[in-house]
Length: 249
Ligand code: ADP
Ligand code: MG
Image (tube, rainbow, N blue to C red; front, side):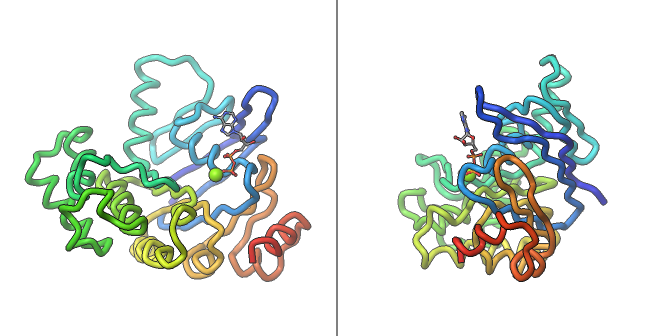
């Protein structure tokens, strides 16, 4: 079953054509890893999915929700974009937690404010999620009192609290000290195992090998090649993919 479908996504910044014509369909419980050189458009693509950047053209479909890029903004469309965002969990390289809120409060915030869920219920849910990401003993800590890996796991719990249809990760471990990368990837792997649909921009090849159903290689605003992690890592077809893999490994 198809969860998310990107059709003919195009995006330029002035003269700079960043996404040329991206088509990507992700099925329920599928884990898609996107790799590619810096500047190839990976972050822009994820941002376009949630209209954090408005694409110049194309269609984003998430479940029953369909939003066409570039069409006139009206109440209906605003509402569609809002729903699109609510159903998408976004985890950024920089964790973007609220610094003046505890881990627990960070995770409770979305359900309470956006979904209008009662405080006690939101709290119980947040506790469950923080336990799930291994932070049972850190719930009352503020972000500054947590390591980068712990902060990122709070960010994952926060994204999950909205019960998204798909999780988008943009280089979630790139800002972490090497010894903290594993604990974050471990949580992501567990979520993948439980059937979460996810699109993950990462250069962590071990994660791709363990968790990805499909690896996509992007360069210069285009999907150059895609396949299983085995196919992409052991038998890349395109020269650009080969060169990239030599550089990262
Ligand atoms: P990646 O995530 O693959 O490194 P990005 O999507 O961040 O690539 O960037 C792709 C290109 O788009 C780069 O040339 C970058 O400079 C440009 N770009 C990204 N965001 C903006 C923006 N808000 N304004 C102007 N240019 C941007
Ligand atoms: Mg990026």
